[in-house]
Length: 583
Ligand SMILES: Nc1ncnc2c1ncn2[C@@H]1O[C@H](COP(=O)(O)OP(=O)(O)OP(=O)(O)O)[C@@H](O)[C@H]1O
Image 1 (spheres, helix red, strand yellow):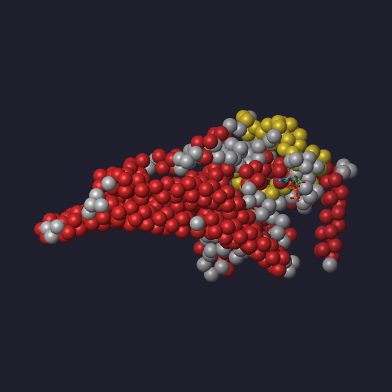
Image 2: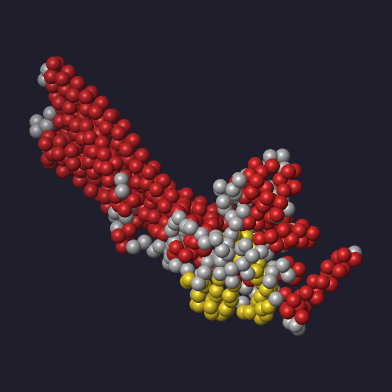
């Protein structure tokens, strides 16, 4: 949660500190514009007084001063808006980029605790509330604090008793704003949570729209969305009710103040203590004060909202997971990776998971990981990839435990094809060359041939420049998997990890790809997780996992010859293939 300094009134100072010069410039422009604006009533009073005395020349001079200060205030206001609104936009950009960079620097475990819709609402909505406070909110606040002393000084200069009388009602305003602000902050926190729940739910529903439609869940999902939306609307209404009190309270206080001015100011004039010019000036001062005082309520509300938003942003930024090591320039060794797991374990609260497990892979080794559903294949590959840190035991690569640079070096030489092939919404060319942007056209086509994607690319109207849609939606599951495999191979990885990477490819194409992959054996260390025995046979060794532990380990031939899970699987799948061939 936010630390103590963040929850103080100046929680946003760390965001502004970097922009001190701009802030001071904006502050100077605000003071300039406010001082100029507050002096205008003073000259208007003088002008009226001169008119009262039929001093036409004097009144013209005072009117010219009025014009000059009005113009000066206008110019100051222009600079104030440009500087402070510009500042808020910069703070917003920095905060958004900082949050985005932070998110991309989080390890696996972080994303298992977060929901995408919620994170998106923090990057969008919460950052937006902070911008509103650092821009328009801060501007209004600065206006009030700079207009008030000058106006007060001029008012006291004319008559301190009348000043005290007309300003007294304004002190009630501060109390009112404090109470409203407190209520508003509490509602705002709930409101932002409600918005986050709404955006998480809608993000999930839209992402899983095919499942929703296929299972006829539209009504149920719309119903739940309506509930969340109603809660959000109800809280928004509560917020509006509380917020609506600002304007009437300010207007009422201004009205009472005007009433005091007429009653008490009028009596002072009748008694000859004040002249008409003084009363006119006081009226001008109250008009000049009214708007900033009213907007003070609005800016206080913006601060409440922003503080709640910043607390939610800080909650993400203070997540307990350590950051990923920074990217550094890396010179990769030529030979394939050597890996060793010693007593490596990763278990979830449910007790399910992987290990303790020992495993050694020499450079150029190939290992197939076989096992039932949930036996730990993916976890093992994630651990070998350095994406999931062992909770106990250790992973060493090329004989060394992975430190920060070691991890980056490990990733630089990694070709990783996850179970769900993910493509970015760009062209096929960009997706394939993502791992090695300097790859030549020829190299891209060579790899496309290895994964049997060349024919498809030739058939596509824009060839390699075809846009594959969001997450590669324009390609079939098997095509997506082959593109993801090509992306990994094009990297010429030292370690190639394939997590059931060809499960959506038809058996014939899969055999062709496996045949082509043989050319890579020995050049990369290969670990592949699979449910298919004939895929496992591509590798020199097979590891059978059961409930996260090693059940069998040996060459495919040895395992096929001894009784056990592997032999049983092979028998079953061979029979299946015979049946398919016979059919
Ligand atoms: N993030 C997680 N939180 C909790 N449990 C998890 C998590 N990820 C995996 N598990 C559990 O760990 C076990 C191993 O999961 P893993 O994904 O490695 O299985 P797998 O062998 O790859 O399965 P499959 O063949 O279905 O892909 C499973 O029982 C799974 O439920």
